[in-house]
Amino acid sequence: MRWETVIGLEVHAELSTKSKIFCGCSTEFGGEPNSRVCPVCAGMPGALPRMNRAVVEYAARLGLTLDCAVAANCKFDRKNYFYPDLPKAYQVSQLYSPICRDGRLDIETGGVKKTIGIREIHMEEDAGKLIHGADGTFMDFNRCGVPLLEIVTQPDFRSGGEAVAYLVKLREILLYLGVCDCKMQEGSLRADVNLSVRRPGGGLGVRTEIKNLNSFKAVGRAAEHEAARQIEILESGGAVLQETRRWDDEKCESFGMRSKENAQDYRYFPEPDLLPMEISQAWLASIKESVPELAHQKRERYTRDYGLSESEAAVLTGHKSVSDLFESVAGLSGEPLESARLITGEIMRLMNNTDTPPESLSVDARKLAALIAFVLGGRINRGSYKEAVEAVFSHNADPEAYIIQKGLLMLTDDGAVSGAAQAVMEDNPDAVRDYHAGKDKVFGFLVGQVMKKLGGAGNPDMVRKTLEKILSE
Ligand code: ADP
Ligand code: MG
Ligand code: ZN
Image 1 (tube, rainbow, N blue to C red):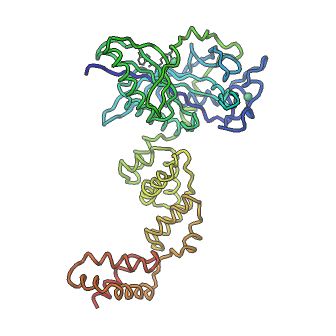
Image 2: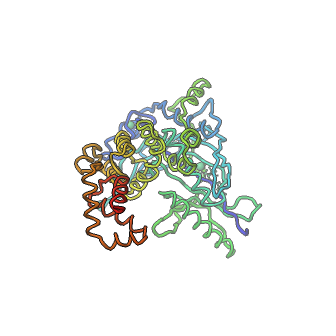
Image 3: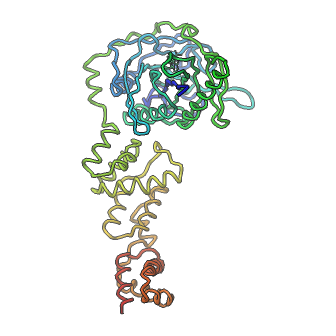
């Protein structure tokens, strides 16, 4: 290998606390511009911040899960910069004593396991948004003061693929912990890629930082692209400029934004309006106890207790919303295997077809459990089941009403089935002849025709038996 890629990630996760970090305003996404602001988060002179305890708790919960040391004492600092999305002209952040340090997260790529070091996790506040319109630029401060955790890794990744694997796993953890909703399209999870290249075994090269990555795919693409760009510069005798670059995923290209600033540029100093925090061991112990079952623990339990395959368990735990749905349906129906089959099959297919991201998944588990009872009880066939599942998924149909209204209850009436079988035989004399001549394959065709005649509501077993009987007469 002539060049080695070195990547470190900085991930910003917006916390799903109800209120902002230093005031009581709502953190909810969207809303009429500037409808969720008060003197504190709008940076009015004299307004004083008040620490939201839940933010410290969320930070500790994540830190403990990532094997970090959680500080017994931590403080905030001011990071000063002037930009219109920041009404106070400083961001309250943590430079000198972040709440968590020295953690780790194991990832796996192509069957190879690797541990990524977490350098630190710190708490800070988000800035507002600029809305660029035809009549000028407008400020929306609703996002000002929304709590963020910045999770900074060591430069431990050696490819974009490793970085993406880490992000997938980190997102899984954030969702399971209930700390962040991880909606990248709403900006609640954002990743910056720091990347340099070097000769294997050498010291760290000069890095660039790439921003504006709004999907995991974009992270992978941007990393590959940036590594290639730097290698080309170095191979042609040039030097990489330490700078912040902006990724344009549509053009698949990055652009220099500004030369990289240093901590000194921000004139960091201790935040005088907030007291240092003391975090007690007893409180940490209670937080540790409240950490829910994580994805890898669920995977173990599903394969052990329910007899699911590794791959089914992996699909079900890929997202908390999916494993939550699975557990509800399995619990309500008492049929874990059928529930797993339903969710890894039909529900996943419907989510794909309708571009439903897992975090927006909302299907009534009770209704799915009811449909499972219908199909396993032999009252509807697999085809009708699929149709009814889709109706529940896409417009929250009532299973029983839907089945009755669509006439999906299986016809177990002998007369109707044998009548349909008789009619199909009369309509298809060639197929009947072929069958008697030993071509077994036409049997499936005849079954299909009878099912069709019964409007899809025939009991397949019964149709098969009836046909066999009539054909042998
Ligand atoms: P800054 O103060 O500019 O944010 P940090 O030292 O905090 O820089 O590092 C930010 C991120 O960049 C971390 O994830 C770190 O691992 C990564 N990083 C630092 N130096 C390099 C380098 N030479 N190549 C790749 N990544 C790097
Ligand atoms: Mg940094
Ligand atoms: Zn406020």
